[in-house]
Every structure is written in structure tokens, then in C-alpha cells.
Image 1: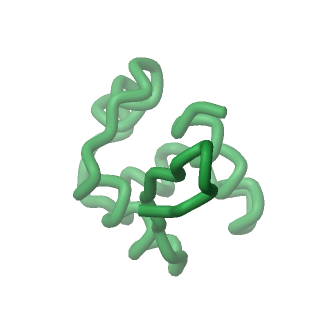
Image 2: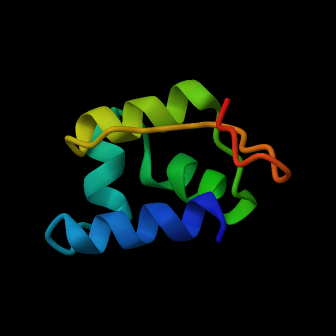
Length: 71
């Protein structure tokens, strides 16, 4: 699942918020945020900001397939 899909699901679960609503919280334009979502192009910092304004935790990790170890 792409990060854009995850963000869209999160917006629905957070009260059916729109991209415009999220853009306002992030203090950016809806056009800028829509472009990032179309390209599925978010930095780690941006994902952390999205989590913060939506009152969520953002967790990024690698999991080694052979051992299940999460890094």
C-alpha cells in the first residue's frame, strides 16, 4: 500500500477530512499537497508533520525477512 493510500485512509478515519483540510493544518497549499500525493513523494519529515497534525504516531522501520527483526 502506498503512503498516499495510507494518508487517504487516515483522513477518512479522522472524520472524513479532505486534502484541503490537511493542507491547512500543514500550512501548505492544497495544490502542493495534491501534487505530493499524486507522486507519492513524501519526506520522512513531512510524514512526521502529517502524523503530528492528525494526532497520530508515525513509525518507519525496516524488517529483516529472515528473522523478522525490526530496525
